Every structure is written in C-alpha cells, then in structure tokens.
Amino acid sequence: MRYFIQYPAGTSELVADAMSHFVDDFRAEYQDDSAMIFTSSSPMERVADIPFAKNAFAVITEIRRGDINANVARLAGSLKKSQFPALPGPRARGFRVMVHIDGELASVAGAPKREIERTVSACTGLRLEPSGRGQEFWVIGRLDMRDLMFCARLPKPARPKKARGALSHELSSMLVLASEPRPDDTFLDPFAGSGSFVAARLALPAEEVIYSDPDLAEHRDQLPGEALRDHRVRLLAEDAMSLPSLPDGSVDVIVTDPPWGEHEELPVPYEEFAASTCDSFARVLHPDHGRFVLLCNRRGAPVFDHAFGAAGFQVHATHEILVNGHPATVFVGARRDGGEPSQTAERSRATEPPRETGQPAKPLLIGMGTYRRSLNRFSR
Image (cartoon, rainbow, N blue to C red):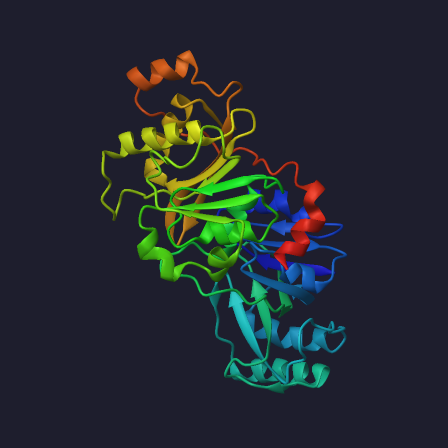
C-alpha cells in the first residue's frame, strides 16, 4: 500500500530514520522538508498511529500534474477504475473533497469539483457533506512532485487537548524518539511546563518519568491526565540549574525545551543560564549512558553548543527545524567517555566565544528495533 504523511517542518532526517520502527517493509518514494510518500505492508491503522505524523493518507490514484481544473476532472475519470480501500474506524456516512496544492488549500472550478464529488459518491456509497463531517478525501500536490495524488485521510487517534503554547504532540513524540528510549529509562524534563515531553514519554515503556518545573503549581491544572495518574511519574517543583532532589548520575535521558530568552525573563544572562543548565545536566545524567535532546531557539544554538562541550557532552547531531514558524535547533547528544569536560573544552569555555553549530548530521535513533512491539503497542 502507498501512503502519504505530513510531519513537523525540518524533521525529515529524524522521520526517515524512525519510520522502519513503526511500519513493516518501509520504502520511501518521495520526501521533502515536511512530507513523505512511502510503501508499506502495514495496515492503515498502524500508519494512522504513527505518533509524529500530523496527517496520514492512503494514496488511491495519481496523475501527471498540470492545470488544476483539468487535473481534477482527469482524477475523477481515474477514480472510476480505482479500488477504494476499506478505511479503518467506524464507517462514515458522508464525505468531502479537499484540494491541497503546494502547502495551501486551493479552489477548483465548479464543474470539475462536482464531477469528482459525484464519482466519489458513486464509488463509495457515501453522500456529500461539505460541512466537514465524515470521511475526507484530499487532492494533494507538492512543489517538486510531478504527480497529483488523490488520497483518503486516515483517522487519527484521539489525543488530549494541549495547553496554549505547548509543543505539538507530533514534535514532542519525534524528539522523545530521538533520545533512543529504553524500557528501563529514568527520564527527565527539567523545563517541563505543560508536560508535552512527559506525556509523549509515557506512551512508551519507562522505569520512571520525572516532571520538573519551578512553576509546577501554576501548570498543574493544565497537565495531561496521564501525567497525574501514571504511577511512573514523579512531579518536582525545582530549578533546572540545581535539581536538588536528584542524586548524581540518577537520570538516563533528558528531553527538554528550555526558555528561549526572548519573551520570558531569565534569572541570569543567557550564556550563564545555558552553562549552568548544562552543568546541572552533567551532574544528574548517568556517567556511562546519559544522553539528551534539547530544543532551543536558533539564535541561542551557538551558546548551547559551546556550553555542552564545556560541560563534558558530545553533540552527535543537530537539526534545524521550525516551531510554530520560529527557527529552532535540536541538539542530540550524550556524555563523553568518562563524563568529564575535556581540557580543550575547559580552555574554550574560559577564552573562546560560542562557536557556530555545524551542518545537521545524520540523527541517532539506533537501538530501537528491540522495542518495536512495545513501541507499537504503547503508541496505540
């Protein structure tokens, strides 16, 4: 079966590396910054459950791209010869057709749109419901794709409503997966806020999941229900730059999104904030296998890059992404052997300005195949 998915902009390398852990016989046919076409033998239910997919579609037919009105008319003719798949979930009574071209909804002339709607109704037995209820069928074109696709949108699993300003479920899940999750992990988000990373980590096996934020009392009413009910969760109201309740080396993995220093007031200058945060990470992370994923604003990335090296960390990969339209950088890394800052790093911390981050490297999502069944089970 051929599928099309959309995901957070800029995470294409992470997505490509993670896909084979979620679907069988994965083979990519097309990929750009925020979308992918692939084939897989997995059922549609599993594709719909991919946690980092914003939208997932089953591809029904496609034609060579040209004038949009002529294309829609030709798609209608092609659909009469196509097999509509049995879609997962309760059978819908109605449908609507959306046209999404080059990242935007597009208008189509009345005659070709009515023709494709009549064809879909004849092929499926569904009635047209333009108000949006029922099954959605999408005509999709991408800037550098030569073909135009007709797809059935797959139903996404219901997810709790996010607090305003919280990271999306898709991006939170993607960054948690980048941390190489293991069933025996002690996981920490020291800037947990509304709990997006904690909720994403609870979808996977873990020994303990620690939420820490000095404003816990303010955020408690907005926390996901699972963060309050799950026995694996420990709630702390502590400063990330000290974390007094956590013993040295007691945490396996940190995934976090510190304040960006743009709209919130920091207690110290940004360089000092980054250095103290990384020193705190170095203390609590396990000396042998401690690892981290950190999201920061693009302008602050050189500062954190410098602070990681000075604190004894090695950055394995960086990814330039967009978060609600704002440029951001993702760092993926781990403790250096021995966990101590190198002499070079100590000297650079005292004498050198923060260095620019390098080109994004191939991400590390290794070691997840062992937990594939658990991942599928818990993501559902």
